Image (tube, rainbow, N blue to C red; front, side, top):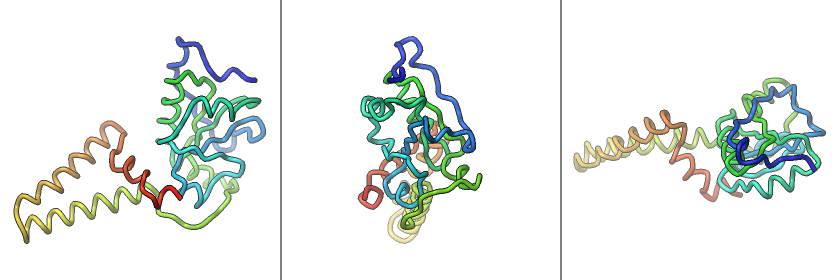
Length: 181
């Protein structure tokens, strides 16, 4: 078994990025941290789904036995970096993040297993935020000015998400039934 758990001194180290063409398919555990709906739509053949919200370092270590590294995959790289941080905090040492995620994999002309279409989590967040702003503004104009607080709250949430790279609405939407088939 490869040494996937580092000692406590080195477990805080970050993971490295790996280009799609440099992924060693036979010696790497390909771990997709997107939602089940996104995974069903398109994924790399041989990858294993383990959504970020339910990532468990001990299970990943068992899955990675006999592999050289664990390549973390998401749509563009953001959730994979968060997964790498979460695994590193639990002592998981050998991780890489697929640079650019599934989007870069597809752009490189590499094959994907295709399933049924789904709306990406990022688009769902934009739809929900836009709908809440529109509804709040309309209610504020037609019903009562206090409804203006809704678009203000959504705007503040978007600013927070941009600054911290953590999206509460995305986390909430990822747990919705249509994203967890």
